[in-house]
Image 1 (tube, rainbow, N blue to C red):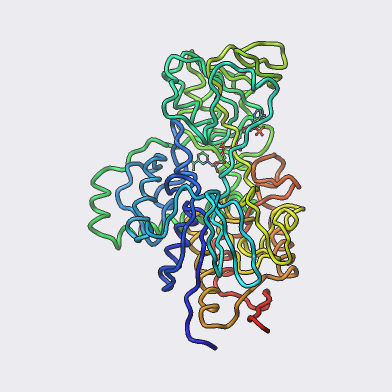
Image 2 (cartoon, protein in one colour):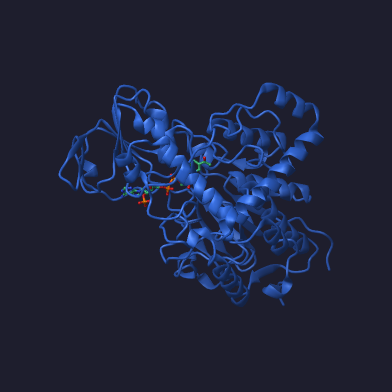
Length: 488
Ligand code: N01
């Protein structure tokens, strides 16, 4: 074995998973890395999303890195800009700026036989021994194909590309889509809009939660003085999060209790039976990504708000025509229509061993061994890639655990144990079969459509608890990989 060598690593994306990867590399003594970020700043979804009302619906105590718990969140559920600032502060605190290239969209990455050549849209090229794709799940906005959209003479905006200069007060606004985003943006725009019309194709269960609850300043001051207490609070939050994982992955009285609470949230907040009927989903609560709000139903009950559940037929120059022939005149259309969640690195030209493209490798849908390694793509890892636990385990933690797994492999590379490694098809299939079996009893599989499903009808989530995830990513299992050394 040769003496320790330093790997060159390209990290694609400076969101939660890219930042976790970079800091994990640093902690392992690897400093020759670059983070290529297509946006103008760090934060990933928290950089791109800044629509009115954006609030994290996961408590801040667990929506943060375990290695950098923030004591002084302004709210129990932090507003979006504060989360983006937290991530930017971490980048500064850990000295990542010199490694960061913003406005650097990766357009191609090709395996050269011994490593990778990565190209940006600006024509820069980087050679690397490893590539870590931290490109995110909720990354590409989904624009629905609705007839007549091009003819609309008002303003059209997608929530994930919000224009902060867009006037909304006194306007007639249509919001299309009712996921977490649609519910937040309707609640935020309703008070000042002249008229707000919420176009809802499939109603969502909306669980009442105190989304605006401030965290008292003294709590932040105490946690700041007592870092051990702050860490203990983070651990307590992680323990609490286990309950949620259990509720969504296994049928039990606990799941039924949460589902009853969702039904109660609707019943107690919407007195009008006709409106309640139209807001009642035809699937079980928690089947889709659960929406939380303390203000949505109130907003809908306001005099300037209307719920439209009739299908959209077409967009006209001045509004939206529904299939009952009614025309809704509006000034602004807000698409809260979500993301193409399974595109991952694409449309990047990602080419693995023997010229295989990611589209060919994923012809039947995205797949990766333990969420991170793809057959045909040596020395390439994803963080929060296919089957990541976006619906069940705190994401920062999942990113940290995956990054540590990748660093463990890179450590072995640095000692000269191998030059390239590639996960086997068989191990990836075994993992896929294990996931498919465990998905059966999950609540996501109880009869709804959601962004959790791939086009091929597979649920793109991890149906295991945190302990199982940590175990599967604790120690690299060389039997599941082909390891080779140059010239061997
Ligand atoms: O997107 P979604 P999102 N005509 O895919 C509708 C995270 N998030 O941006 O269900 C009419 O959930 C579609 O209708 P249907 C969170 O993980 C987190 O809201 O397909 N409607 C649906 O109602 C969340 O789950 C926070 O019938 C159309 C909506 O658009 C994820 O982001 C905040 C349509 C899309 O809902 C995505 O949420 C916000 C059409 N042609 C978001 N096409 C936090 O607080 C689509 N729809 C952390």
